[in-house]
Every structure is written in structure tokens, then in C-alpha cells.
Image (cartoon, rainbow, N blue to C red; front, side, top):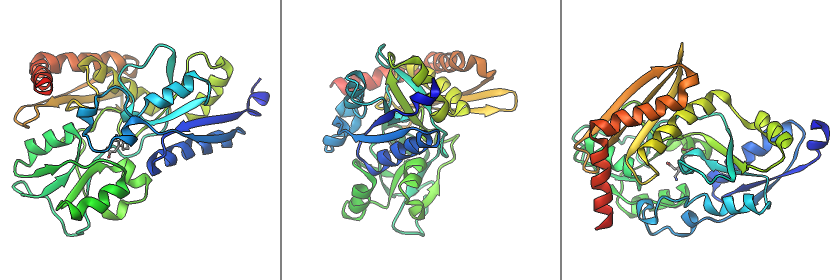
Length: 316
Ligand SMILES: NCc1[nH]cc(CCC(=O)O)c1CC(=O)O
């Protein structure tokens, strides 16, 4: 029964960054609100330890999630909290994506120490980002911009901003806002031109599939945001069909509409020259089908060739 379930202490596995801890705390608050006691357990992941390589060189296989998934399997924690964007498009069979918490604004933004910084079409600005998608989209829309690798937590990146001669950093608004750096935002990219990575701005709750069904149900009720969940299912289906991962410059954004939902998605070549992007509309019951369908349209338009050439380049 639910009464004795909430006597349980829910151990929440998380990474140790300020953003990750914000996310874990927000899950803890939701659980406490329904009567659970909570304990936050911090793990360090490969993505936290290796900071001198860009993510596409680290490999896309769960660099921010693997250690947490091991803890779920070992029963060291009941749930793991991830940035939804960092969760692989397919997860192992013994684990389950239980809930998606309410999404923040999805946009990419620019952060600068110069409040007057403006990005013009022919701007020669130097922008810090390690995201393949952001680098390629910048090349498409701002061909004279130079990008510089920038990894690590936000505090580290900001410290290096001037040191490395950057004018601005390009990041997800969600993370910037959640760690309290709104004041440094000088530009918000429109979400239908700089379409975000699948899952950007949402927090995912993962658990072991064999966690007690009653407990799963109560945890899901406390943590899940159904509107976010349905959009994330569509985006993750798109990503899976694209055989994406965080090292591929694909992007997708699903949103609820008056009569159902829309999903926008596509891919951009690494040199920014070719941009494929489409939008589909349909009922929420078809969320995953629409994600798959959209990916197949993009692959058929030449997305498959873009993916192939990226893989070839990586193997060199
Ligand atoms: N691995 C990077 C990562 N994963 C999630 C976020 C931001 C927060 C979010 O999208 O929820 C970030 C940093 C960034 O893209 O700026």
C-alpha cells in the first residue's frame, strides 16, 4: 500500500555538477511532497572525468549515464536522475525510463561577459561550444563565426571564456537558468532555426525494470509530467531511428498543438552546407510513430548520406 511505501527512503543517483544536483534536488522535492524521505547519492561519470576530449571523441555510449545505470542495477539507488539529452536513444532492457520531469524553455542561448555583444549574420565572433549540432548550425547560419571547444561545468567554461579569447558561450538555456546564470544571457536562438537536441531542457528519471511495480507507480505519479513525456517519446523515437547520439548533428523538437502535436527535426552536415529539416503534425497517440516517420523522411532526403560521411570522417 502507498502508506508504507512512502516510509521508504528513496535514494537518488546523480552526477555531482551544480546542474545535476539542481536536477536531483528538484526530484527530491517532488518526492518529499508526497511523503517520501530522500537521499542524494553522487557518482562521477566518464563524462565528468575526461574533460580534454570533445564528446564525439569520447564516444556517445552513455558517457554521462553508465555509472548511474550500474548503481541502479546493483540496487544502490532506486532512481537515477539525468539530463534527458544525455540519455542514450536506446537503453538496456533491464532498465526503464520511468518519468520525464517538466521541461524548461528548450532554446540554445549565448552567454557573454559583454552585455552589448551582438551576433550579426556576417559576425566574426568566436563562440565556445563542443556540441557537433551547435557547431554545424552556426556554420549554416553564421558562416564567419569561429568555434572553440568548451567542456566542463558552466563555472569552468565561464572562467575560460576570456582566457581562450571567446566572445560568447553557446549553451542550453535550461542549464544556464537552473544554475542561476540568466544575467549573462545576451541572445536566445529561435527554437525552430536552432532546433535543440532531443530531450533538451527535460530531466529524466531512470529505474531498474524490476523495481517493485507499486513503488514505480507512486514514483512516476510524483515525478512525471505527461505533456513533457509524450513529446520526449516522439523525440527519442526520432533519435533512435536516426541512429543518433550526442555526437551526431541531428536535432528535434516536439510540441503539443491544439489538436495533437507537431514534431520538427532534421540534420545538418558538419560543414553547415546542407540542412535538412521537416515538421510533421499528428495525434499524440502516434508520438513515437511520428518521430520514426520524420527520421525516415530526413534519411530519405539525404540524411543517410550526411550520417555516412560523418562516420567516415570519424574513422579516419
Ligand atoms: N551534456 C551537456 C548537457 N546536457 C544537458 C545540458 C543542459 C540542460 C538540459 O538540456 O536540460 C547540457 C549542457 C548544454 O547543452 O548546455
